[in-house]
Figure 1 (tube, rainbow, N blue to C red):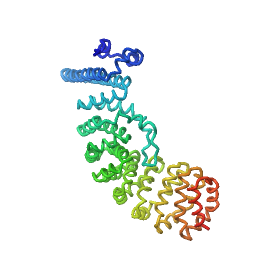
Figure 2: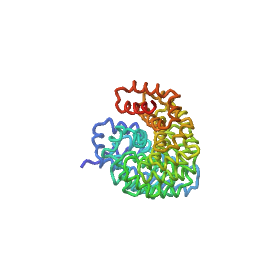
Figure 3: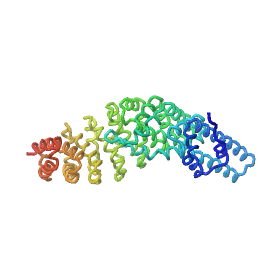
Figure 4: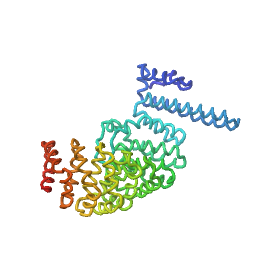
Length: 448
C-alpha cells in the first residue's frame, strides 16, 4: 500500500494556502490519483482533526495561565482559522462520498466546536442545490438535483444515525444544535433521508427540542421546516408526526410568534403537508385554522406564506366539518378573497384560493351565500379573465363557479358580471382540452 507523500504531510503542518491545495489536488495527476483513495483522505483528515484538537487544548491552557484577554482572542482566531482552512480543504478537494466520511468522523468525535464549524460549511455548500427541489405539498415538481444528490451519497443510515445522535446530545449548546438542525433540514428534502429519519427517533428529538426551546423562534422555525419536508411524501411519516404531538407544537409556535413571517411560512407549509393525512386534517381544522388565517392577515404581501396558508386551507376544507368551520370564521372568506385581489398576477395564489373556494362551496349552501355576499363571484370572474392562459387556475375557478351556480341568486350574479361571455372565450381557448371544455359546458348549461 502506498504511503502518504511527505509533501502532503508537510503541507498539513505548515498551513498551505487554498490555492496551493487546489494545485496539488486538481492539477497534479499523481496527487489526484492518490487522493482518489478514501483511505488517504480519511488519514489526512484524522491528522488535521487531531492537530486542531491538540491546538485547542494548548491554546486554552496557555490562555488561562497568562490571563491575557487579547492573547485569548488571538488564540481563538488562530484556532478558528485552522478550522476554516481544514473545512475548505475538505469540501474543496474531496468528492461527496469522501465528505460523508469526514462528517462521520467529526460527528463521532462529540466535539461541539468541530461539529458546529463543519455543519456550517456543509450547509453553505449544499443548501442552494438541494433548496431547488420543490417540496411545496404534493403539487410541486421534483427537480433533477434530487436524484443526483441522493444517489448513494446521503442515503446512509450510519450518517443519519450520527446526525440525530449529535442533535440529541447538543441540546445544551444552542449554536451547535441549530447548525445540525439546518443540516438535517437540508437532507430531509431527499425522500430516502426522510425514511431514515423516521426510523431513528428524529421526530421524538424534534418534539423535545421544540418543547425545551419554546422561547426561541429560530429553533421553532427550523423544526417546522424539517417537519414540512418530512411530511412531503409518506403517509406513514405524517401519521407519526400526528401521533407524536408535533401538530400542537407547530400551532403553539405560530401563536407565540405571529409577526415572524419566516416561521409562519414554514409552519403553514408543515400544516399543509400534515393535512394530507385525514386524521391530521381533523386535528388541524379544530385547533389550527385560526392561526393560519391570522398569518394571512399579518403578512398579506409575503407571497410564499400566502401560498402555503392558502394551500393548507385548501387541504383542510376538503372535510365538510372544516369547510363549515372556515365559512363560519368572521374573516375567513374575506381574507382569502383579499389575497386573491391583492395578488392577481401570482398564479399559484390564484389557484390555491380558487381551490379553497371550490371546497368551501361543495355541498354547503351557507358558504355559497357567504362567498357571494363577500364579492367572491366578482373576484372569481375577474381572476378567470386574467388567468385565462393558466389551465390549473381556470379549472379551479370553474369548479367554484359551478358550485355557486346552483342558486338563482348567485347564478344571476355570475351572469351580470359577464360570466357567460367569458365562459365562451374559455371554450374557444381550450377547444382541444376535453376536460376543461366538458367542465365549462356543464357550467354554461347551469347558467342557461
